[in-house]
Image (cartoon, helix red, strand yellow):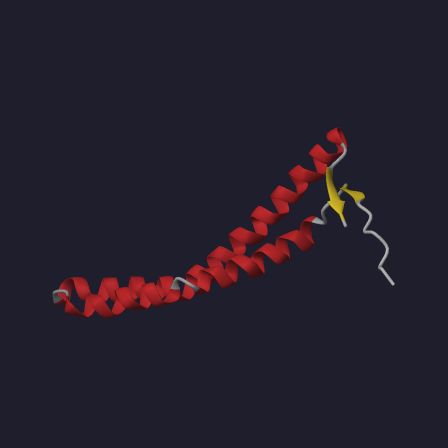
Length: 103
């Protein structure tokens, strides 16, 4: 017996919940920020070869970036998600939203 043919259904995205989108993007950007930690730690390790008066500042900078960049990325992801969702919701009222074909 043959399965019934697939039907296309068009759905319209009318609204995005700003806080939910912000939280989702905060998680995604926070995880992406974790990708950069090895590079900042490498900067800390390489700076041990610098002269004594430059070494401490570069080591602190590398370690500080390793700790704070994922947090900074997450905060920017949240703020960007909230702002983008708000702009989408306002413009969707004017043009009706985005349409998707779903099978």
